[in-house]
Each structure stands twice: as C-alpha cells, then as structure tokens.
Length: 216
Image 1: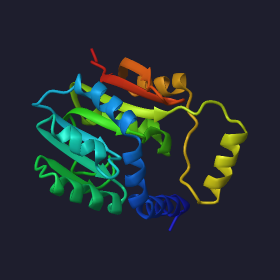
Image 2: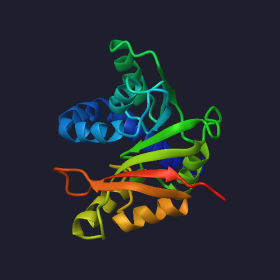
Image 3: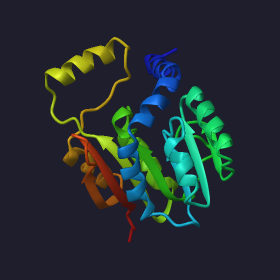
Image 4: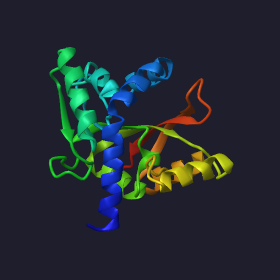
C-alpha cells in the first residue's frame, strides 16, 4: 500500500468516525444553512439534474432534491452516505440517489449535470485543480458550479497548530485559501465567476457561483 492510499484511508476513517457528530454539528448552523439554500434557489430550475459531491449526511442534498428533478449525491464516507440515505427515506424523498464514490467514479458521465455543488469540500482536496477540471467536464454547456469554502488566509500560529494536528492524523489535511487564490483555481479550470460573497455571521466562508466557460 503506497503512502497516498494510506493517507486516503486515514481520511475516510476520520469521516466515518465523525459522521454522527458531523450531522449534529450541521444542525447547529441552521442560519448559515438557510443563507446558502436561499442563494442556491435563485440558480435552480425544477427541471435540473444536479450533483452534490462531498454530500456528507445529506442536509443540503435532501433540500436540493425538493427543488430539482434529480439529485446524485456522493461522498467518500460510507457512514455519511448511510445516514443521508436514512434521512431521505424518513423524508420520503424519492428523486435522490446516494452513492459511496468520488467525483472520478465511472458512473458519473460527462456533460450530465445542470449544476454541481461543492459545499465545504474544496479546502479538503489534495488536488483541487484536477477535481475542478473533472467538475467542469461533468457539467452541461452553461452549467454552474456552486461552492462554499472557508478561506483561512495566510499561515499564522493558529494555522501552524492545525497543520501539526493534521500531520499527526487527528484531523484531515486542508488548504488555507485566500479568496483570490480560490478564484484563480476556478478560472484556471475554465469557469467564469458569476457571483461571490462572504456568508453573513461567518468570518471566512465564501459562497461562489461559477459558470462553465463556453469555448469558442
């Protein structure tokens, strides 16, 4: 087993272990959740087919399903997916499909989605450029990618402590983006930014809507 596989297994185990706690913590952030949903609604149509990647325990996916034709939702944590499926069943949501998968899974086809969501996922990616290019590939022409990402800024004592904790395997590794760096990643992956704003009552969480660029 190579070091990359070992690190990936560590990350999966972390999210599996914290799945129940994660779900409870999500419920505490209802105001932020409502902000995101309110913003997202203006970009969705009832005929849309969407992908929620890094869907966690399905809090966003299940709500989005009520606004669209079909939702495919994926996460690398099987425990997260199990909880999400249970919540969808309890809410009698039938137009959602949960899969234990990554965005590179073969069942995800090019030009299939009107919108893709990446909530609180970009800062956790080992290779965000590769993922964003794949995201672009999965979108239909003029499709949109909507993300929410913490931008922690430049490294400081706090970030150094987090880095040490991460290296010890206590938490997964993550990136300390600044907003302009995050924008550059999206532009470099052939997206045009339509909307960006800092979520209210947060110090560093940015909501960005990016459109798949039309190539001439």
